[in-house]
Length: 186
Image (cartoon, rainbow, N blue to C red; front, side):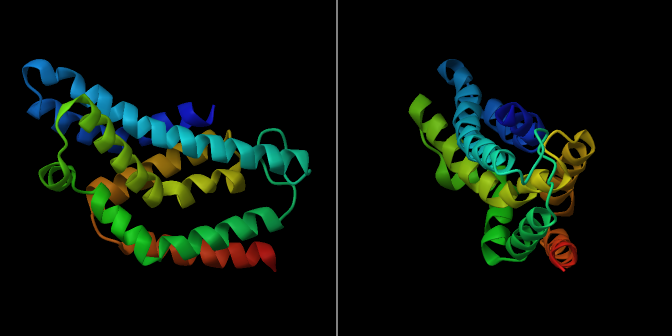
């Protein structure tokens, strides 16, 4: 479930990367975009396994319902504070800069062949998870199966990665998450 959710939510931001790779692929290279996406999806699958484990722990300890909705205000408080801190951290900005430039990545980090395409997908996947994990963790605040949250985060990520192209949204959201987290904790 987590992998499918992550794949659908991240498709709008990885799509341009796959299209750039597809436009450059010729002849025997036509499989490269799919292999790139496979490497990318592998990284999100690993993240999804971690998220599903957290969900299981929260459920088994009574801190969340079976749908992933928190039953204790400490859970959303802690998650929001952690997400807020990360949103304003330099690492978030570095990952965001990477995620905003497929051409730059392919020009500087191109790897030939099928294995190279998978490696590039994995590398981009790590940057993408590095950029978006805190936003995905907010599922434990809103409820894991909350469709409104899924659509909202997807739009946030598209706007942040493809339209705004500045760290302003990350910093503003980070401050908001910190304030909201403190409110839950108090």
